Length: 230
Ligand SMILES: Nc1ncnc2c1ncn2[C@@H]1O[C@H](COP(=O)(O)OP(=O)(O)OP(=O)(O)O)[C@@H](O)[C@H]1O
Image 1: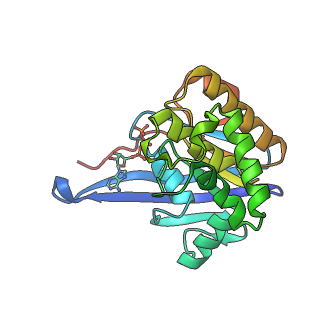
Image 2: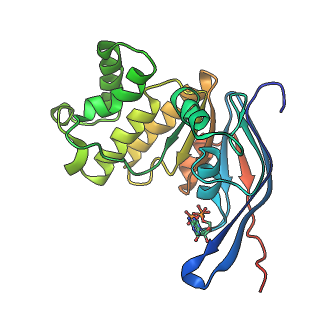
């Protein structure tokens, strides 16, 4: 691990067995190395199906990898116990996908404030920070007290983004965070990414939109499809 690396991957390898295709073996990641330092936003680059989401899910501890190491916060996610992964998700790493996992009957403002509350901020301070973010992301204030279940795709995505940025995470994993946003809101997300980088956050992102990618990426990790055995 280099001096200031927040995240360090070495030799990460992963395959899937596709049971619906007669147990076909699909090799997706083969020896991925990556260091992400404070203030960097590394964008994963490669064709559809190359393994970008798989790599993000492996870093977040959702997918187990076959071999290699994924070190963040002094813990190797590749071999960590579930409670260590939960600890990393509470203090060190956040994943922001394009879809909000809707919590029934909880107001949008509280959905956004919750990670800040979980990190010890008072209810008042967490809600104030949540409100600032929702306002910046142009979510009408009349929606803040409603559960997001019935919100449009773009409204839910903005709630999700606000929830991701409500805490100053050391590492953020962004999976198409602007996929259903208009240009004005996508620009706000780009600002939030830049501000988080300025605070020293490291980021790994998937971003298909070329102008957005050009704006946020400090570096690309080029991923190539693996040759599959016949
Ligand atoms: N849980 C799973 N079980 C079996 N195969 C999977 C699983 N998750 C992903 N795959 C397969 O692994 C390959 C890589 O998928 P992944 O979603 O990581 O690609 P991607 O690069 O993010 O693609 P896209 O840009 O289209 O989102 C695909 O062929 C996919 O079908």
